[in-house]
Image (cartoon, rainbow, N blue to C red; front, side, top):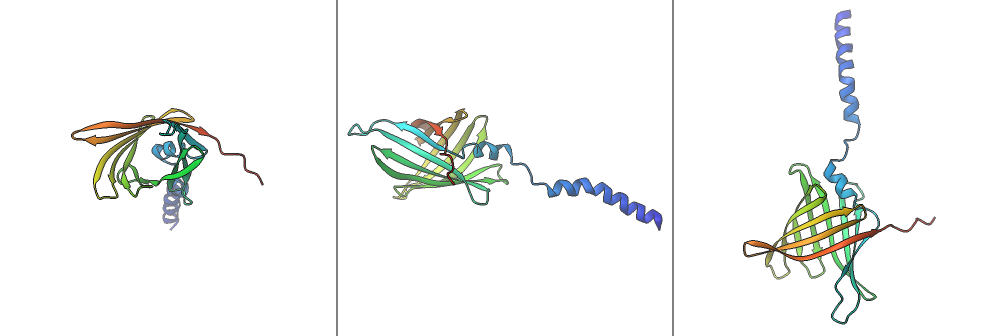
Amino acid sequence: MISAVLRRLAAALLLLPVLARAAEPAPAPAPKAFLDSFVGGTWTAPLPPGKAGDTRAIELVFSRAPNHEGIHFESTLLSGTRRIPYVSGFYAWNAARGRFGMFYTDSVGSLTTGDAAVSGNALLHELTEINKDGSVDQVKVRLTRVEPDAFTNEIYLLEGSDYKQVASVRYTRRPDPPHQP
């Protein structure tokens, strides 16, 4: 009887480290940490002047979903003193695919969906844009971190059998203002 108790006690002691590890939250995979680094502050990229010569830019804000399992993003076009909502979207980690799933809608009614994967200091997107008229475009996007508070956004559109760059902007981050009680 004592040997049976000792075997059970030994088995329980062997399981303690396993049970302790199971109770600890799993660390975020490196890709999630990379995307999390975009959260906070407001990212701004200058754009070429408008037809009337007005100053133009694009603002982008990333925020964590309330359940901390995704990243929401919103962008706004700035034209002179006007603010024009542009894109609203979301990233979520797809563990089965080992990459992010993402989607966004834009102000002209397009829906863009696809995957994004971290490669070094870049987030590489392979996307399908479904336009309001039902036509479909294949798009690749590369967000490249060039400094802790700066990244480039390069957009490529499939034309024939080749991807052609259609846009490239450099975003810089300004911190959120201090919280006032």
